[in-house]
Image (cartoon, rainbow, N blue to C red; front, top):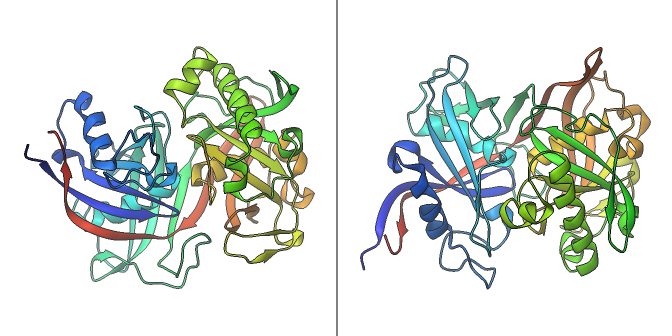
Length: 387
């Protein structure tokens, strides 16, 4: 049987990689997209390796982005993100990928979807998953998105040209509310663990935050070690699936586990601590304001997913959350718009800029911003078997 050939680009965005499609190269009937994406990525794969496709066996390497011109006045391109499960028959569209968002503007420029002039581009991106606007700013090199630069993104070897991402009014990306339950603290009952305090926050992407010590860990553990802790991972999924129901993202915990493994994220937080990065570099507690690990699709991320980091930083500046509880006091001020909040994570320290205000109507996330790098790795056609 002949394989179907579709124009595509393979890109790294931040600490993730994805297949990038122009929307015009895909079927108009979106019901056909899932099968195409799964075949291209190599899912579902019960072996968890995705050797028969472009995926890399973990959630951060099992992604697809679709970009096309936007009809909106406030956007240049529309961007739809698809999270392809590694080992199960599931393609999720309920969340955005912040890391791959850094590749969208450069892709749009290099594909001629956006006209640019001068030495710098600003591409306005409408993310269809979250109904939010992202501004992407980056340098140009002879009219194309610059790649070479001296920005060191922790978790990625070498350096690159920085991409500045500003997420405008990121609150309520999936649920319509920054605090979906209206509470800064909710309590979830977990079999064998008892009542667990959590904070349910929706900024850039919905996240559930729990204290690492409530799970019997420090929060500085290596992601692969956490993945190997069967009971900890089971407790995290029990909390995540029940929290998804409280957030209105699933009807039952079973529904959340089976049909929405990528959203919401679940994060473990602790105070700043001495630790080692995956590269073996030493971090001292004074290097950061907070320690965090985030799980999605059953994997503990080697570097925090960008939208998860944005949500974590936002939660850190909301008085009373479990994240705020463990954040260095000087960085936990809600109205601090000048200094970054430094999150200690497996690949190093991630600085995040965010502005949060407590108004008469409740907490409001005004903006959140971060720097990333990107690189076009391969361009041509991806082959779809069985098509």
